[in-house]
Length: 329
Image 1 (cartoon, one colour):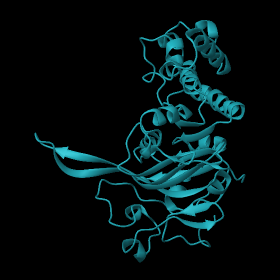
Image 2 (cartoon, one colour):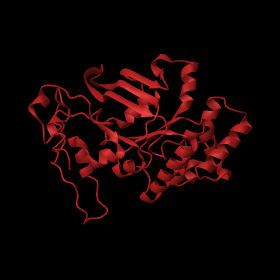
Image 3 (tube, one colour):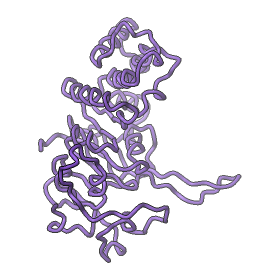
């Protein structure tokens, strides 16, 4: 695996939401959407972030961008701590980070033309004259596969795939370095998904982009990612290169995710691991968060909380029951 210099780092980040009740909004609990995540993103790589719905993937992406304030922890971008920046410093840094939203229908303002949507960042950051901004918008539209002469059309005049290309163009208008792709394919037809994936890969090479690719579609993540992080209930439980993770999953939850992927060839033998128990609404355990569903738990799981351990170069697992011999398929 190619070693890349670090562009962004997430240091022990937590994002908690209070649960309130009654007229006076009395706090009765806490939702731990992101719970102590440590993660690094290499310059020029695609880091896939996978997990079931509600595990905190999108929340982590929004915290990295500063769209949501972190409850605890630090976000470092190119060595700069975002929590220590304000005013013009933060304003300039945000030009280098953009996001492609999940839903191309609700993320575009229906009252604005495509040209205004794509060029909004240029206006906010006062880049170029109006004529230069319009030319840049037209150039970006052409790069992502849209016709520049449609610059004055509205979002409802485009198909779903074209709307997502508008979202991609909006993210690229400021020439960012890091792009958070928040499930950019989930609202698209399968026939359109391949086109958008290929577009993202081509743009990455052309503009030297770094992606944090958030998705629950493992087949897409396997195709586009250099490394993959698996998230469960706000925590990273496994991290490895894409080839290594899909070839040798070590955490029981990762195996359960891979087990759920349908095979294109029904006659092809499928790797089988111990079945993971169904999730429930019970209170989270005090130590290992996966213990209630784990098929291979050990007594130590109820005594201490596991930490990410490097079991091989670049392969990290958060599991006290990990056995390097029995884990091999």
